[in-house]
Each structure stands twice: as C-alpha cells, then as structure tokens.
Amino acid sequence: MKRPYSAHAYSMGPIRRCYWAEAVTGEDLHAPAAEGALSADIAVIGGGYTGLNAALALAEAGEEVTLLDAEFPGWGASGRNGGFCCLGGARAADSVLDRLHGAGASAEVHRAEVASVAHVGALLERLGIDADRHSEGETVLAHSPQKMASLRAEKARLERTYGVTCTLVEREDLPAHGMTGPHYGALTLPIGFALHPRKYLAGLVGAAARAGVRMFGDSPVMAIERAGEGWALITPEARLTCRRLVLATNGYSAENVPAWMRHRFLPAQSSVIATRPMTQDELAAQGWTSHQMSYENRRLLHYFHLTPDNCMVFGQRGGLISTPGNEERIARRVRADFNAMFPAWEPVDSPFYWSGMVCLTAALRPFCGPVPEMPGVFAAFGYHGNGVAMGSYCGALLAALVRGEEPEGPYPRAFAAPLKRFPLGPVRRAWLAAEYSWTRLTER
Image 1 (tube, rainbow, N blue to C red):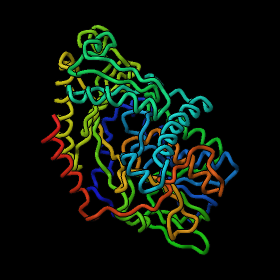
Image 2: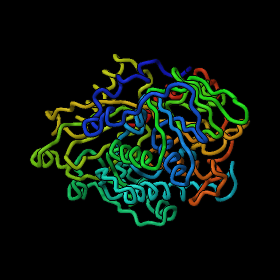
Image 3: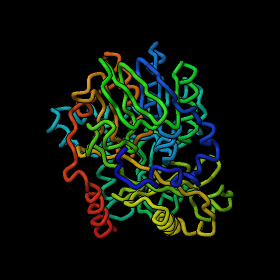
Image 4: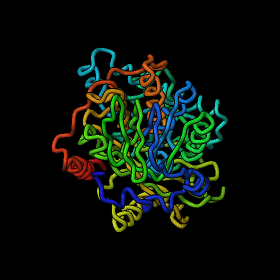
C-alpha cells in the first residue's frame, strides 16, 4: 500500500500511551487474521465508526457481511480521538455549499450534523453501551476580545441554523460556570456530548458480532481487483471475493487501494495528552471544574474536557511529520500549551500521549456514496475532525445505499457529489504546512 505519511504513522507507536486504551485494550478488540480463500456478499474495509456502523446496519437488515481491518477494529482514529460527539463534518462555507450544490444544500448538511449526533445517542441507548457519556452540548471559548465579539454575533445565526437556544457566558461569569482560565467568554451550543471513544467502539464491535458480522484483524487489504461481477480483496494471507464493497478507511486510506482514492483525501495529525485523575482540591485550585467538552475558536484549535474520573483530555492540531522524535516534540508543545491555559495544573502529571489522523478533502466536506466507475463499491470519508458523530452516521447512510434503499435520515446532496483530487496531489501536505505557518503568524 502507498500512504501519505511515513510508516510510523501506521504503526502502534502513536497509541502506545493512549488514555482510552487503559479501559479497552487492543486485545479486547482483537479479531483473527483472514486466511485462505473467503467469500462474502458484502465486504467492509475498515473497522472504525463508519465501517462498524455500516456493517451493523447491514447485518441487522439480514445481509451477509465480512469486515476487514489492517490491525484491529478501532485501531485508527475511532479508537484514539478526543471523545467529542458533536456537530461538524464539513468545513466548507454555507455560501459555497449552496453555490456548488444548489439552494438549500447547506441546510441539508446542517440537518445531517444534528442527525449524526442523535444517531450515536440512539445507538448508545438501543445497544445499552455505557460509554461514559457526559457534557451537555459543546462549549466554544474565545481566546481574544475579537473572538468573543464574533461569538456574540454568531449566537443568533447558530440558533437559527440549528433551532436551539445557545448560552452566552461573558468573561467575568466564567468562574461561576467552573471555567476559570485565560478566555474572554464562551458560547454553549446544546447539541452533542462527550464519551469514551473505545467504550463506544467496543459496544459496536459486540453488537456487530451478535448480528452476525464476521470480523478479521491483522488483515490489511493490499489490492482490490475485479472478480467477475464483484471484487476480490487481497490481504497478506487471504483472498476475499465479494459482490458489494464498502470502503471505510478515512484518514488511514491508501493512495492505491483502490486507485480512485489517489489524492482525494488528506490526513492531518491531531495530538492529545491526558492527565492522571485529579482531586477536587486540584480542580478547585485552577477553577476549572466543568465537564463540558470545549474548544477554542481558533484555526489551530485546542480541544479538551474533563472525563468522569477527572482526567483532563487536551488535544490540538498542527503536526506534519510522524516520526518518534517529532512525536516527542509535539507532546512537549501540547503540554506547554496545556500549562499556559491551566497554570495551576503544571505540577499534575500527564502520563498519556497519543496521536492520530483526521481526514480532509479538497472540497472541505465529506464524501458518502457510490464510487464512480466501480460498480457495487461505496465509500465514506472526510469528516474534518468530527468523525465520532458524522463517521457513524455516514456508515448508516452507506448501509442503506448498499441495499439500494433511500436513507431514513438526511442525505445531503453535497455528500453524494463527485469528489475532486487535491491540486499538487503528491505534495498536498504542503497546503497544510502553509496554512499552519500562516495561522501561527497571524492568529494570536
């Protein structure tokens, strides 16, 4: 397989100290390797939220499904994210979506955002998954007076767009909300919640297995070939033939599996630390006692929340090179930013650090639909850092599309539209480097 980053990004290295793996290990999610000649009606490549949601919905509808993962289900971004189940998925402006995809296209995307959060919440309830759900919606924090002015202006638009009432908190009132820090105010949008991503994932794996999904790990798909009216998936130890195929590899996709993926996705590194559990006295010393999932309204954002056992999970974007040495440098940078935001917690250890890949597209919106010129093949990817909700929802959308049915929930025209390749494809990470450099220079 040809992938955009070095081998370290696709190894166990970036998740050796993952906080979420304390409760749900790779062994807990282990699946045997595929071997020999196998067949399935429907095959799913990728055992993250998209692949598992697609496989579960298909199996519950009576379909025969086999899922393959390169390592183990949830090894990729689904098992190592920040635990935000929230609105998002597209970064394209509403005006751009409406211009390119027709009047009302942006409203369709926003309805899908709301539906995606509701989809995950309903799954947790229906399947009885205890995923440490907490946080009432999502809080945006202003890191400058200008950004607070933007939040005040944005409140009415968000309320119109999502049909909710947002809560605006001025700077002087932040301590009363348990949010003492360097910020100039906050806005809470009451849609979404935080969770333990691997507990959600383990619940999906168990439900899929009970529904009859056959799952294999340690089975990277090295090639996809035409096989009669279907497809053959080649792994190191197996050849699996199928009639229909779902591609659900998102930021861990390969450029040549299949060739259609080439230059249509751009992985971007996100890095996270987590502290040890803190005492009530330690929380009070900083003045941050809120368990709201929160982020700053800056382009290279920080995102964070207290877990139910009072560990602070704190992440940020900005890595461009995945090597052991650079990971250590990024970890130090994340910790330095953490100390600047929460100075009273500087003595608190942060024994956990991990990183993973979010996935961008040139159109700045997800793709979810049939793959052009590959009959019977469907794909979903490009959630722009909001894959817990949107990746799950797109998996459910794919299940309906694979069966030739109309999806029950919103299916935006923008998601189904053909996806162009990135300009300067082989060196497209240069776009990220330029954006990051400009942002660091101009955003204070």
